[in-house]
Image 1: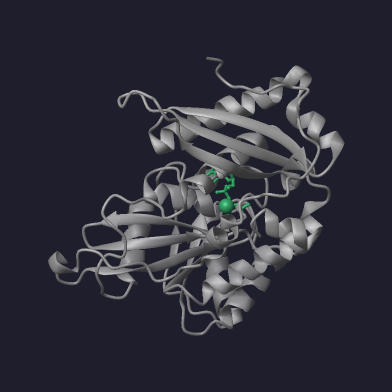
Image 2: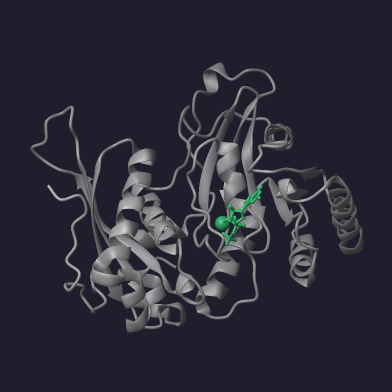
Length: 347
Ligand SMILES: Nc1nc2c(ncn2[C@@H]2O[C@H](COP(=O)(O)OP(=O)(O)OP(=O)(O)O)[C@@H](O)[C@H]2O)c(=O)[nH]1
Ligand SMILES: [Mg+2]
């Protein structure tokens, strides 16, 4: 069997009419009440609830979500606006259960997609117990941060904490100044930070402490998810995201924003021996223009093959099953601006 099937000259141009409508439902869902689990044996003082990470694009929200969950469940990249969906990660601790809601970076919208993403973020704020605003230590606090905190101040009831991310990138003096600036931003916007916590997802600095502090801010209650669940995102979404992450690696300028991935079909192959399962995944990678398609596919399909192989390994690691990935590149012209196409792509 070939490792990664695709025929370089057989990429459909058309935008399929039959995108999985279920996707809409999956992606709309913000922290909906989850079924309670095991309330019978909950220890005294056990806490559970929702916290979301917000911040400008690229400040390290998704990396921090993964660090706290202890496994990679959301994708990250050095390109701004990597996260486009709200994904929940679950942290299991002896003293409680923390459901982390990773949100897209808040930014000045350039198109309809940007507006949708910002709306998504703001809806989430009102539905969680704690909002944690991330400010990367290697960057000055700017107008974008101030705008975000001013908006957040309007959400009165939610507890707010500040997280100084990427502490590994700066020295102690700079970090001290950064923490003072965060405190000052709180004062001048009328935001009462319940905590200001410096962390590094790369070195692991204070990640454990942040988890402990967040659980301490949750209301008392039973676990909301079964032991061992690390996310509630459907496997189709996780797979599509991992493909998008692989595709983002090494592309630049406008192209990262133009890429969208939809898993069309996913299922265990029939007639396989029980001890050798194989998961078939058929996915489409959309770009907005013909020129972009050429870049994504690469010379004789080399780049796409690499993307497919990298994505497949990541999906196998996350789902624990060997994967056969069938990946096609298609054009969805200017999808970021087009309400109809946005809806089909799940936004
Ligand atoms: N050195 C260092 N880099 C980090 C740390 N956390 C994240 N990064 C890097 O910062 C970049 C952005 O990380 P993401 O987690 O994708 O950022 P995000 O805030 O989720 O970005 P959007 O989804 O685009 O809003 C990536 O290149 C990460 O590797 C950290 O603690 N230290
Ligand atoms: Mg992100």
